[in-house]
Amino acid sequence: MADSPSPAAFPAMLRRRLGGLHRHAVDTVGRLADLNKAIFVVGSRHGDYGRTVRLLESLADDDEVSPADFSLSVHNALAGLLSIAMKNRQSHVSIAAGPDTFNAVFMESFGLLYRHPGTPVVVICCDEPLPASYTSMIDLDESDPVVLAVLLQGSKPANGDDAVALNVEVVSGTGASENMETQIGSFIRLMCAEESAETRSRDLALAWSRHV
Image (cartoon, rainbow, N blue to C red):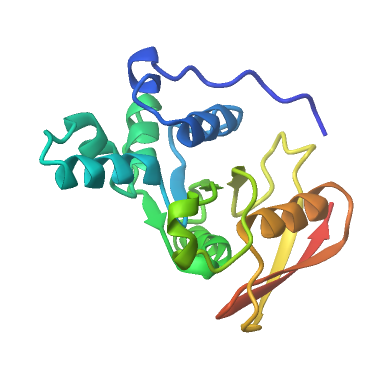
């Protein structure tokens, strides 16, 4: 693979508003091309939950709610900030589909490529483990924050020496989900070395094959 390009400039004023996970996400996305014209598809189970927790704690303590936390706690905040920073006027998508989030993001992205074959799609998957106070809601073993950003195009670009052709087949859900960290690991190994992979979740599983 070619050396990663320098990240696209993200305005410092907007960057200061980001939480840690979303800051890593914009740094990762910034190394991709076509950010001013691509459709962003963002997938995250929990989003920037730290802001939501702070809002709930403020309400419980009868304190004032932070306007910044309120505006950035919504699930499409990352897509919105990216579109502002990249001066991108496309319609974007944010998805939270529980354990099916990773696979649902790619299915949505493939649908967008089919409907808009000349428009690139940037897939962004990011999540971090919930805090211990939410133990009763944790259904998968999630140990580390994860970020993945991938540029998808309907056809091989003219300068696409590093382009990889992907085929994907929908198979029935397994009922036993992998966490996003495991799914991203399988996808990266597919892109770098392996010829096939499967990403499994509760209601949706995808079988992948790679052709360089």
